[in-house]
Length: 153
Image (tube, rainbow, N blue to C red):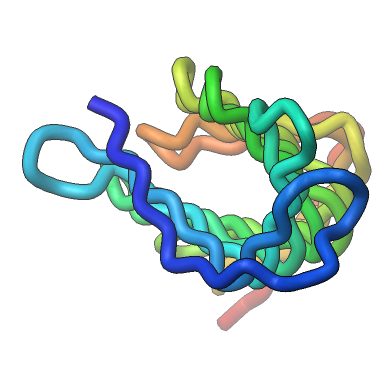
């Protein structure tokens, strides 16, 4: 079941030709609990109302993993529930954090992907690589062209 809720105020004049919403919020429900929640400072819904261009966004993935994805900008597709994150993208897991400049979230398969350079940090390592494939269920991240430094802490 797709639960759509947003706390919004309409601002005038709108960006481009659509409606500009401030304090945009979407909650994806699974049964009686929230699977994920998308928050954005602003959302431009455009003419067709099929996508939303987002500013200052955060995706909280509650089930199954507890990941948080944030970015300066993004694009949300209402029909697929997929998202594109652009600019200072940060992904935070239970014991690691990752940054890149662009990433995509596929809601149906539960993967976050990127073809961009990434930087990943944990308590005992710092990693740099190219590309990204994160399985949200397992929090396993894959990258290539890896340079890794292990910390002795």
